[in-house]
Length: 305
Image 1 (cartoon, rainbow, N blue to C red):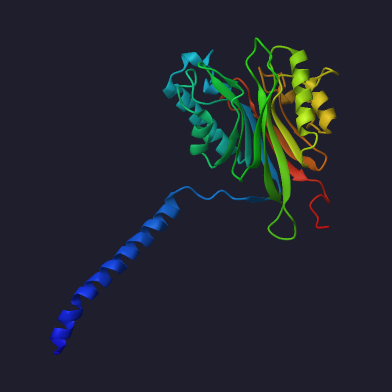
Image 2: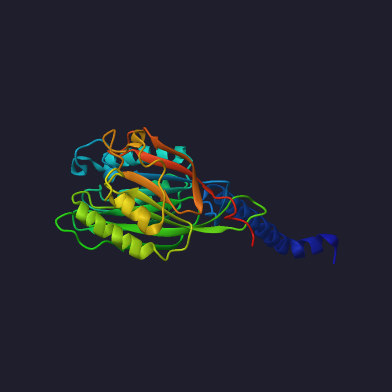
């Protein structure tokens, strides 16, 4: 067989091989682009000297409007974009939201928490619909840049005539450095208490204490308590005492989060933790101001045994 004949004989196989190689190269390029431009994998452990948090009642994304029924879907999306931008700019690892809506008539027909997650790096979440009807569906939520595990939602006992409230919980793995420390599992909760009656708030705090008393420590409870610290019978004090939690400068008058002076929004931490920094964000994206806290482990809490 001549060389020309041999080449002609194997030409179809060479063409198939070239086509296969080209297809594989295209597939590899497509996978690379998908890896670069697609969703990034959620980290399973936070490696950072501090755990940074933000808590905000998002007020159904109505912004400064009197009621969310007067806000269009486009208005909800615009307000949520501002909220998402603030959450990103805060640098927080975890966000605790209240009055966070699912799809309903007064939410513009879409899920607000999913929208915020899609427009930020907070890709892990748990969202409880503690008030749920044909008109509205909303509750508390946790959104995290780190994978949340053991997530669940708790509905408080009904408190007619006010809408349902509750809390959500989740855990994340945190170590203070890349080397030389073992991860800590931190339990987090996002809470919203009744706004109308202190007796109901006390009952809801009792439910939280009962549910979280045996939760793994460290423990962080965040949210809108609709109560301040000043009253000796304050529900915030009740929770702090019931779960052995502490607040940052609870009597500081400059940390108001509602109508300039009322401190209704809190971040409480267990004794294994300490406040490194705590501030109220002045940005107006809701009728509440956001609270940002930087949390560290107390010395000795993250040492290998």
